[in-house]
Image (cartoon, rainbow, N blue to C red; front, side, top):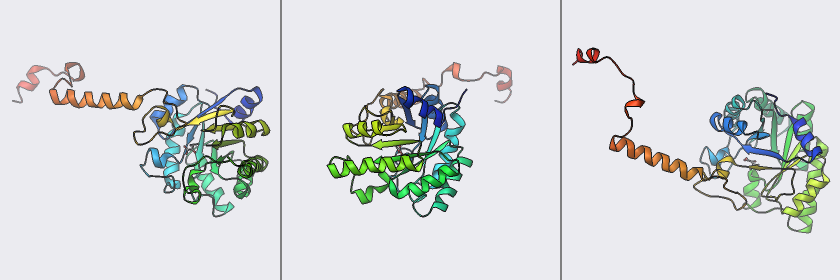
Length: 276
Ligand code: KIV
């Protein structure tokens, strides 16, 4: 099985073919994602909301990311594994950024890392790229800055903010990022950024004009019972199917129809008889 790499991303942009990415946090789900030829599995720090039950991504630690990334990497023999750098793992210094990205590559076995921000994280992007670590950038709505942004909002609607976003996109490309995620950016602005940049742009809540799309897997499977963002399409109501299966299991155990004979293991009668 040939593993997808940064070259896959480059080639698809050049050929005008769409890239696909889905979040992955564990071995079982990654096996399914990988089996469906998704180009990349993103070990997103949305792990905090989706798997760990936090209200945001702020509390996610390097240890959380490394632990889940390693499980994902064991299942992804084709999909490229991109790991999010959690809040405060890259803001302090370039040195600390390299140490933390190194952990995601060495212990987590990721193939690339992702971090949020534009010009202010360009020194970190440059240093990682020089160290041989592919970097995916992330602009638009950047959930790690939720406290500074004051909420989850569309980014780039005014002339000033749109120009700023385009400038930040050029900056991360110039710093060496191999790809860029745009989250909650108006469709036409995302399409313009995609057209202007040489690197592939992956959108989430940013319209169909991007080079590819990413979604949180549990969202597109309707498994998030708390909340579903407007930009999510539920491709199959798996959450409802899971709920029905679990309710059926409870009922079957309670009424004695599970386990049936075929679910058990037999023993000669005389062995049992002698024990009574
Ligand atoms: O953490 C995450 O899942 C992400 C995607 C929403 C792009 O960063």
